[in-house]
Image (cartoon, rainbow, N blue to C red; front, top):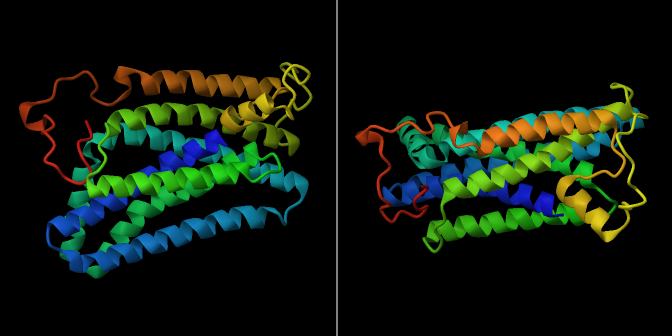
Length: 292
Protein backbone atom coordinates (compact mmCIF):
# COMPACT_ATOMS: atom_id res chain seq x y z
CA UNK A 1 0.00 0.00 0.00
CA UNK A 2 2.84 2.40 0.85
CA UNK A 3 4.60 1.80 -2.44
CA UNK A 4 1.44 2.58 -4.37
CA UNK A 5 0.76 5.60 -2.13
CA UNK A 6 4.22 6.89 -3.03
CA UNK A 7 3.51 6.42 -6.75
CA UNK A 8 0.21 8.29 -6.49
CA UNK A 9 1.80 11.07 -4.43
CA UNK A 10 4.87 11.54 -6.60
CA UNK A 11 3.16 11.29 -9.98
CA UNK A 12 0.08 13.20 -8.84
CA UNK A 13 2.12 16.02 -7.36
CA UNK A 14 3.96 16.55 -10.64
CA UNK A 15 0.63 16.92 -12.46
CA UNK A 16 -0.75 19.14 -9.67
CA UNK A 17 2.27 21.44 -9.88
CA UNK A 18 1.89 21.73 -13.65
CA UNK A 19 -1.78 22.72 -13.25
CA UNK A 20 -0.90 25.12 -10.41
CA UNK A 21 1.78 26.87 -12.49
CA UNK A 22 -0.44 27.21 -15.55
CA UNK A 23 -3.45 28.55 -13.65
CA UNK A 24 -1.43 30.88 -11.41
CA UNK A 25 0.39 32.41 -14.38
CA UNK A 26 -2.85 33.18 -16.22
CA UNK A 27 -4.42 34.70 -13.11
CA UNK A 28 -1.36 36.85 -12.31
CA UNK A 29 -1.11 38.12 -15.90
CA UNK A 30 -4.81 38.98 -16.07
CA UNK A 31 -5.65 36.31 -18.66
CA UNK A 32 -8.55 34.64 -16.87
CA UNK A 33 -10.28 34.31 -20.23
CA UNK A 34 -7.74 31.59 -21.07
CA UNK A 35 -8.62 29.48 -18.03
CA UNK A 36 -11.45 27.63 -19.76
CA UNK A 37 -9.35 26.12 -22.57
CA UNK A 38 -6.69 25.20 -20.01
CA UNK A 39 -9.27 23.31 -17.94
CA UNK A 40 -10.57 21.69 -21.11
CA UNK A 41 -7.11 20.39 -21.95
CA UNK A 42 -6.63 19.15 -18.39
CA UNK A 43 -10.03 17.41 -18.46
CA UNK A 44 -9.23 15.65 -21.73
CA UNK A 45 -5.84 14.54 -20.37
CA UNK A 46 -7.38 13.13 -17.17
CA UNK A 47 -10.13 11.35 -19.14
CA UNK A 48 -7.59 9.82 -21.52
CA UNK A 49 -5.42 8.63 -18.63
CA UNK A 50 -8.38 7.01 -16.85
CA UNK A 51 -9.48 5.40 -20.11
CA UNK A 52 -5.97 4.07 -20.70
CA UNK A 53 -5.95 2.54 -17.22
CA UNK A 54 -9.35 0.92 -17.81
CA UNK A 55 -8.20 -0.54 -21.12
CA UNK A 56 -5.14 -2.03 -19.43
CA UNK A 57 -7.18 -3.52 -16.58
CA UNK A 58 -10.27 -4.82 -18.33
CA UNK A 59 -8.66 -5.60 -21.66
CA UNK A 60 -6.10 -7.89 -20.05
CA UNK A 61 -8.85 -9.93 -18.34
CA UNK A 62 -9.98 -11.29 -21.71
CA UNK A 63 -6.58 -12.87 -22.41
CA UNK A 64 -5.33 -16.36 -21.61
CA UNK A 65 -3.12 -16.83 -18.55
CA UNK A 66 0.12 -16.86 -20.52
CA UNK A 67 -0.98 -13.88 -22.60
CA UNK A 68 -1.83 -11.98 -19.40
CA UNK A 69 1.58 -12.76 -17.95
CA UNK A 70 3.33 -11.75 -21.19
CA UNK A 71 1.40 -8.47 -21.31
CA UNK A 72 1.91 -7.76 -17.61
CA UNK A 73 5.62 -8.48 -17.78
CA UNK A 74 6.18 -6.42 -20.92
CA UNK A 75 4.22 -3.41 -19.65
CA UNK A 76 5.98 -3.62 -16.27
CA UNK A 77 9.33 -3.26 -18.01
CA UNK A 78 8.02 -0.38 -20.15
CA UNK A 79 6.65 1.29 -17.00
CA UNK A 80 10.02 0.99 -15.25
CA UNK A 81 11.80 2.54 -18.24
CA UNK A 82 9.33 5.46 -18.31
CA UNK A 83 9.39 6.11 -14.58
CA UNK A 84 13.20 5.96 -14.52
CA UNK A 85 13.37 8.54 -17.31
CA UNK A 86 10.77 10.64 -15.49
CA UNK A 87 12.57 10.79 -12.12
CA UNK A 88 15.85 11.75 -13.78
CA UNK A 89 14.10 14.35 -15.94
CA UNK A 90 12.32 15.90 -12.96
CA UNK A 91 15.52 15.94 -10.89
CA UNK A 92 17.22 17.86 -13.68
CA UNK A 93 14.40 20.29 -14.49
CA UNK A 94 12.65 20.84 -11.13
CA UNK A 95 14.43 24.18 -10.67
CA UNK A 96 13.35 25.46 -14.08
CA UNK A 97 9.93 23.85 -14.53
CA UNK A 98 8.06 27.07 -13.81
CA UNK A 99 9.99 29.11 -16.40
CA UNK A 100 9.69 26.33 -18.98
CA UNK A 101 5.90 26.13 -18.61
CA UNK A 102 5.56 29.91 -18.68
CA UNK A 103 7.41 30.02 -22.00
CA UNK A 104 5.16 27.37 -23.52
CA UNK A 105 2.07 29.14 -22.22
CA UNK A 106 3.15 32.48 -23.66
CA UNK A 107 3.56 30.86 -27.07
CA UNK A 108 0.16 29.16 -26.77
CA UNK A 109 -1.55 32.43 -25.78
CA UNK A 110 -0.21 34.02 -28.95
CA UNK A 111 -1.55 31.16 -31.09
CA UNK A 112 -5.10 30.96 -29.73
CA UNK A 113 -7.57 28.69 -27.91
CA UNK A 114 -6.60 25.45 -29.64
CA UNK A 115 -2.95 25.91 -28.67
CA UNK A 116 -3.95 26.51 -25.03
CA UNK A 117 -5.97 23.28 -24.95
CA UNK A 118 -3.07 21.40 -26.54
CA UNK A 119 -0.52 22.88 -24.11
CA UNK A 120 -2.53 21.87 -21.04
CA UNK A 121 -3.31 18.46 -22.54
CA UNK A 122 0.32 17.68 -23.34
CA UNK A 123 1.64 19.00 -20.03
CA UNK A 124 -0.81 16.95 -17.93
CA UNK A 125 -1.42 14.06 -20.33
CA UNK A 126 2.18 12.87 -20.29
CA UNK A 127 2.11 12.67 -16.50
CA UNK A 128 -1.31 11.00 -16.58
CA UNK A 129 -0.37 8.26 -19.06
CA UNK A 130 2.86 7.53 -17.21
CA UNK A 131 0.93 7.36 -13.94
CA UNK A 132 -1.74 5.06 -15.36
CA UNK A 133 0.84 2.64 -16.76
CA UNK A 134 3.08 2.56 -13.70
CA UNK A 135 0.15 2.34 -11.28
CA UNK A 136 -1.31 -0.55 -13.28
CA UNK A 137 2.03 -2.37 -13.31
CA UNK A 138 2.63 -1.74 -9.60
CA UNK A 139 -0.89 -2.74 -8.54
CA UNK A 140 -0.60 -5.82 -10.74
CA UNK A 141 2.69 -6.71 -9.02
CA UNK A 142 1.56 -5.93 -5.47
CA UNK A 143 -1.99 -7.24 -5.75
CA UNK A 144 -2.89 -9.56 -2.87
CA UNK A 145 -6.60 -9.91 -3.55
CA UNK A 146 -7.46 -6.85 -1.47
CA UNK A 147 -8.20 -3.25 -2.52
CA UNK A 148 -5.25 -1.94 -0.50
CA UNK A 149 -2.98 -1.20 -3.51
CA UNK A 150 -5.73 0.86 -5.16
CA UNK A 151 -6.53 2.58 -1.87
CA UNK A 152 -2.86 3.50 -1.56
CA UNK A 153 -2.84 5.02 -5.05
CA UNK A 154 -6.07 6.93 -4.37
CA UNK A 155 -4.73 8.33 -1.08
CA UNK A 156 -1.50 9.37 -2.79
CA UNK A 157 -3.37 11.19 -5.55
CA UNK A 158 -5.67 12.87 -3.02
CA UNK A 159 -2.64 14.04 -1.02
CA UNK A 160 -1.06 15.37 -4.22
CA UNK A 161 -4.19 17.36 -5.10
CA UNK A 162 -4.29 18.83 -1.58
CA UNK A 163 -0.61 19.81 -1.74
CA UNK A 164 -1.12 21.35 -5.17
CA UNK A 165 -4.00 23.45 -3.84
CA UNK A 166 -1.89 24.56 -0.86
CA UNK A 167 0.92 25.56 -3.22
CA UNK A 168 -1.52 27.61 -5.27
CA UNK A 169 -2.88 29.35 -2.19
CA UNK A 170 0.65 30.11 -1.01
CA UNK A 171 0.04 28.24 2.25
CA UNK A 172 2.81 25.69 1.72
CA UNK A 173 6.41 26.00 0.59
CA UNK A 174 8.88 23.13 0.43
CA UNK A 175 12.17 22.57 -1.32
CA UNK A 176 10.82 20.93 -4.47
CA UNK A 177 14.25 19.96 -5.80
CA UNK A 178 15.01 17.96 -2.64
CA UNK A 179 11.48 16.59 -2.46
CA UNK A 180 11.65 15.18 -5.98
CA UNK A 181 15.17 13.85 -5.37
CA UNK A 182 14.26 11.80 -2.31
CA UNK A 183 10.84 10.65 -3.50
CA UNK A 184 12.47 9.82 -6.82
CA UNK A 185 15.03 7.67 -5.01
CA UNK A 186 12.27 5.80 -3.20
CA UNK A 187 10.42 5.41 -6.48
CA UNK A 188 13.51 3.79 -8.02
CA UNK A 189 13.36 1.18 -5.22
CA UNK A 190 9.69 0.55 -5.99
CA UNK A 191 10.50 0.35 -9.72
CA UNK A 192 13.16 -2.29 -9.04
CA UNK A 193 10.50 -4.48 -7.44
CA UNK A 194 8.13 -3.92 -10.35
CA UNK A 195 10.93 -4.85 -12.77
CA UNK A 196 11.67 -8.08 -10.90
CA UNK A 197 7.98 -8.95 -10.88
CA UNK A 198 7.76 -8.20 -14.60
CA UNK A 199 10.61 -10.62 -15.27
CA UNK A 200 8.76 -13.26 -13.24
CA UNK A 201 5.65 -12.67 -15.38
CA UNK A 202 7.69 -13.22 -18.53
CA UNK A 203 9.09 -16.42 -17.04
CA UNK A 204 5.58 -17.66 -16.29
CA UNK A 205 4.64 -16.85 -19.89
CA UNK A 206 7.54 -19.08 -21.04
CA UNK A 207 9.14 -16.12 -22.81
CA UNK A 208 12.15 -16.05 -20.47
CA UNK A 209 13.81 -19.17 -19.01
CA UNK A 210 14.70 -19.90 -15.40
CA UNK A 211 11.31 -20.13 -13.67
CA UNK A 212 12.36 -23.12 -11.57
CA UNK A 213 15.86 -21.81 -10.74
CA UNK A 214 15.28 -20.16 -7.36
CA UNK A 215 17.89 -17.86 -5.84
CA UNK A 216 16.56 -18.68 -2.35
CA UNK A 217 13.33 -19.62 -0.62
CA UNK A 218 12.59 -18.07 2.76
CA UNK A 219 8.84 -18.57 2.67
CA UNK A 220 9.00 -20.32 6.05
CA UNK A 221 10.85 -17.37 7.58
CA UNK A 222 8.80 -14.64 5.91
CA UNK A 223 5.41 -16.15 5.04
CA UNK A 224 3.67 -14.14 2.29
CA UNK A 225 0.45 -14.21 4.34
CA UNK A 226 2.08 -12.67 7.45
CA UNK A 227 1.71 -8.99 8.23
CA UNK A 228 5.41 -8.34 7.69
CA UNK A 229 5.42 -10.39 4.49
CA UNK A 230 2.47 -8.33 3.24
CA UNK A 231 4.25 -5.12 4.29
CA UNK A 232 7.45 -6.06 2.44
CA UNK A 233 5.49 -7.00 -0.67
CA UNK A 234 3.43 -3.83 -0.55
CA UNK A 235 6.44 -1.52 -0.14
CA UNK A 236 9.19 -3.28 -2.11
CA UNK A 237 7.28 -5.95 -4.10
CA UNK A 238 9.33 -8.42 -2.07
CA UNK A 239 9.04 -12.09 -3.02
CA UNK A 240 10.33 -14.75 -0.58
CA UNK A 241 11.16 -17.21 -3.37
CA UNK A 242 12.55 -15.21 -6.32
CA UNK A 243 14.32 -16.77 -9.27
CA UNK A 244 18.00 -16.21 -9.95
CA UNK A 245 17.16 -14.01 -12.92
CA UNK A 246 14.80 -11.87 -10.85
CA UNK A 247 17.45 -11.18 -8.22
CA UNK A 248 20.07 -10.50 -10.89
CA UNK A 249 17.88 -8.03 -12.80
CA UNK A 250 16.76 -6.37 -9.56
CA UNK A 251 20.36 -5.78 -8.42
CA UNK A 252 21.64 -4.71 -11.86
CA UNK A 253 18.90 -2.10 -12.08
CA UNK A 254 18.70 -0.84 -8.50
CA UNK A 255 22.34 -0.43 -7.51
CA UNK A 256 23.69 1.60 -10.46
CA UNK A 257 20.45 3.55 -11.01
CA UNK A 258 20.17 4.61 -7.38
CA UNK A 259 23.89 5.41 -7.20
CA UNK A 260 23.73 7.68 -10.26
CA UNK A 261 20.44 9.26 -9.22
CA UNK A 262 21.59 10.21 -5.71
CA UNK A 263 25.09 11.19 -6.79
CA UNK A 264 25.80 14.97 -6.78
CA UNK A 265 27.24 14.48 -10.24
CA UNK A 266 24.11 12.70 -11.49
CA UNK A 267 22.63 15.89 -12.93
CA UNK A 268 23.87 17.47 -16.12
CA UNK A 269 26.14 20.35 -15.20
CA UNK A 270 26.23 19.37 -11.51
CA UNK A 271 29.19 20.78 -9.68
CA UNK A 272 29.86 23.40 -12.38
CA UNK A 273 29.56 27.05 -11.33
CA UNK A 274 26.82 28.91 -13.13
CA UNK A 275 27.34 32.29 -14.75
CA UNK A 276 26.00 35.16 -12.71
CA UNK A 277 23.08 35.63 -15.11
CA UNK A 278 21.96 32.03 -14.55
CA UNK A 279 22.07 32.09 -10.78
CA UNK A 280 18.62 31.31 -9.30
CA UNK A 281 16.84 34.41 -8.10
CA UNK A 282 15.18 34.76 -4.69
CA UNK A 283 11.53 33.77 -4.43
CA UNK A 284 9.14 36.57 -5.26
CA UNK A 285 6.20 35.22 -3.35
CA UNK A 286 4.58 33.41 -6.30
CA UNK A 287 2.04 30.70 -5.62
CA UNK A 288 4.36 27.80 -6.31
CA UNK A 289 7.29 29.01 -4.27
CA UNK A 290 11.05 28.65 -4.56
CA UNK A 291 12.23 25.38 -6.06
CA UNK A 292 15.72 25.59 -4.76
